[in-house]
Length: 312
Image (cartoon, rainbow, N blue to C red; front, side):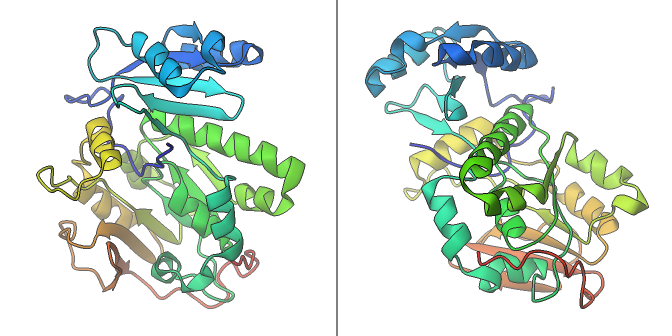
């Protein structure tokens, strides 16, 4: 099972807390040994040959991955196969693998057959005919929301400060581009509108130059799960065991309001409180999530009008 996560808190960055223990990188294809070693060196992890179990049943692979974490308690393993890089939660009985996916069946269907500009995220950001804001996604996670907006014609700058998550995002974009070059030119056009930047979001927002100020800043900060709720699914439990919560979310809002030209959009669980600071100008609310919109100036007609008129 693959679970696309949102923004990870800043584990891996030397904070006083550490939710995520990476034990090793396992490659499942001998042709990928050099690439695997490069990834392993980047994270200072052991590079392990898993080719012998590449075609084995899932339980056998799970036991092999668990063996790489012996004595480490809850831990995670990078797995590199022909279809890309995943982060595997080995303590889960049936395994849980996290990847950034921009060309699988589900995401492709949504890109080609989705709700277009009628989607709440499009309305929140201000996408309309002839208006395609340049959006800075300061909490990109695995890039799902950024990909939706890029599919609608928005130029996207993605920030992800957690190195492990940024690696998944980087690899997901590489895999999707490889697929697109071979089979889907429209996908390549979407990816061309996405730029991944290696930077801490808060520092970037505070230090960005006038020329690089985006039209819209988009935030999707981590919100603490109600651990006693029976509604909490396994995926969300693993998610929170990995990331905790964004303790600087309120600071991100303040910095975003100073950085954006026209508006700031904050995605929140429907029941979550607004971030500390000014009240939203207006709110778009769905069944489980909502978008708090902070308007600074009206988005002008014709803004980046050359953006692609995607169907998504």
